[in-house]
Image (cartoon, rainbow, N blue to C red):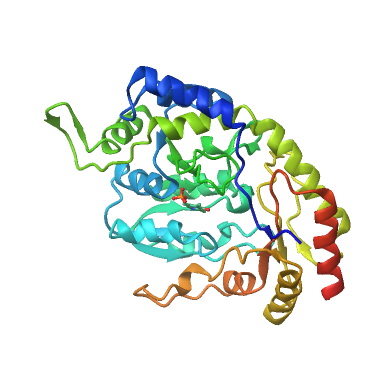
Length: 360
Ligand SMILES: *Cc1c(COP(=O)(O)O)cnc(C)c1O
């Protein structure tokens, strides 16, 4: 039996990548805002309908540059405990203190009703995550941020291709970032982007991502967040397939929903204002022992789901403070993401659903 992992990187036909490689050899430029990177930025931002789009080397440095460009270098940043570790680690890397606001158990995003209680004099920004591509309550978050003079940075690593009220979910907040890592919905091998609607902020991002200087003139502290021509080439190849890939994922997603026992808590995609990207298929089990039982049954069949996201980030061992987030801790202990990728056969989906249902 073939091993089935939670995800599998999409690869375009090799000849299409090779055609771009030939262009790199011809142009003789490997990195530093080369022609393929510029073409990739134009095509991707047009596809998403975004201005001020910056292609960078990964989704983690995108968050770090976003914080730096908004001058968030001290104080507290309100964030979610239910995410990948990079959401919290970038806040710590900026020498800021993460303050965790617990999540809404229905969509796993930050519970907006709990944000204001977490605001102090030291709060500088709110960094929510559209986790699994499910939109946060962006209007309410914007209203709270405005009222208290805070910046909003969305970690939109899962939001590529998601539309909310007909526009890209990356078009919200002072800055939104995305990851184009090989395991993500849309990838450039390693990579990510920063979307900064305000022109002045966007200009700062442009400088910071290239060491903070232009020629011999040094303006501010910067870092190296540049992506190469080889990453841009992979992105240009993959962009052609994105709509088709989202459609294929939708078929798999709906098959799971149709087959899985009603007692599994699934993500309810019933908001008519959201065009979803079908990036993940999370399932919440009754409790952790049930999770361990279901995972063991799947592993026995060579099927490997992932515990996304575990542990709850407020429990990271290297945090100074001991903050409690009971909802996130509970969900984290009993949620798994099922295999979902282009190339997963419907009969494999049936097999996975059967093992899940029978393990109850
Ligand atoms: C993947 C991911 C990141 C990090 O992106 P990289 O490109 O791997 O650095 C950040 N936040 C979330 C929520 C992610 O899933």
